[in-house]
Image (cartoon, rainbow, N blue to C red; front, side, top):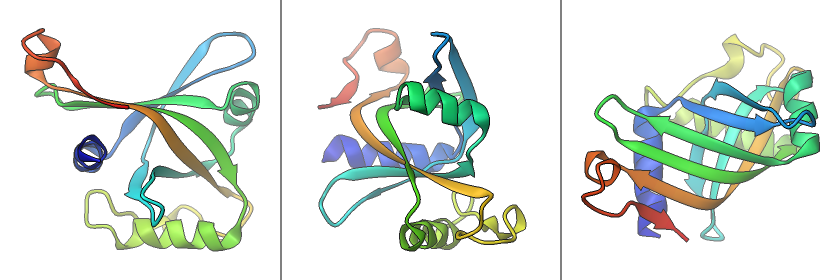
Length: 153
């Protein structure tokens, strides 16, 4: 649980991450997204991304529902989550995550009403749930080989 909590701290401090998918052409595609992470009542780490279900994202996730989320700061604080991703259609979950973003402190917090005026039940915003199967944390010492990175599992 220590690595998961440190991952959340680092990810929420950095805020924006590079999310990579792979499509049917076997080519990766990266984009910058704004996930929010939480440890649920079941004790499991979950990430959430309010986004648009663009044709590329839909095609890539239909081909392979695995993504890699990479956070980086100029002082070389790095956090990487390799995850299974799934679209969430449930309106109650979409509303709860929408409020999770809205209530988070800046710079993590964001009010999506300005981008999606129809709200969380509208057609335009989509929700991705990220379920990590591997976390890795790096810093200058681990990147230079002076110590091993923190990892889970």
